[in-house]
Length: 327
Image (spheres, one colour):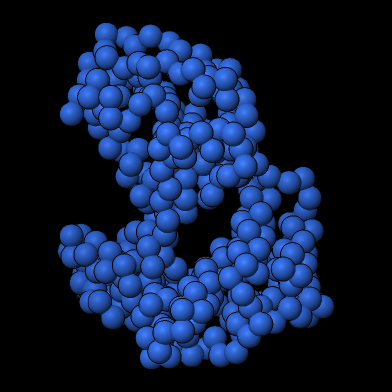
């Protein structure tokens, strides 16, 4: 495929969003591969990050004519939802009338605000591409295959243990595989090595806080958050773990609401049997609508921690507790 064919296929605008950073990076790599194969790609590929450049600069880069080639590739990657919303607003006029010889790729963290006109139009025109994290079973299979390709001796049971410890973020899992490979020095990677090398996203602190939040015990949740922050635990550590736990709870709740047999809940929800067993009666009184509000609150907390809000980390975590407990 050449640049002209790619532009015909994609159009001049692509919005990439979702939590699977690995898939997003892979999609960008596929675009770059086409432009890198064209003449003098260094003149026709530009990449911008966050607030490093003004929207006007990005729009000017898009409007520039390609140098000795059929098209240009311009990529902007946001760091938070608030930043992405602001950038979409500033680039709205360009997105409405883009340069047909430029592919503008906007990488939006998480789920963009569906109320925005730009997002509504992108969905309607199929310019928006969403990449969700795989479930635990798919992530474990991916780890097993990646280990085989890299010639890292690791079996499927260890892959499942790694995913249980770290979650389904394939970028994080790839980094973990590299660490384990160096640590093992050619030996087979086992569960003990995973426990030694990898910091679990669902450690006991996160489990305890997630259980308190799910039970709606606001006072105890706030007390634990204050204790953890005082003990130098960071919201940047806690929120991803809480998000992972609540996404698992959401899948479990969805399976339960479908009234599937108890023995099939774990498989349908894509979680390990031990995680389902530990869930117990945590979901008592929860509905799908309430879970969506909790997940939205976690998304806002992540956005705020990444610079989308001027408040402190402590205030961000306090707001999260209030929003989840009152969802």
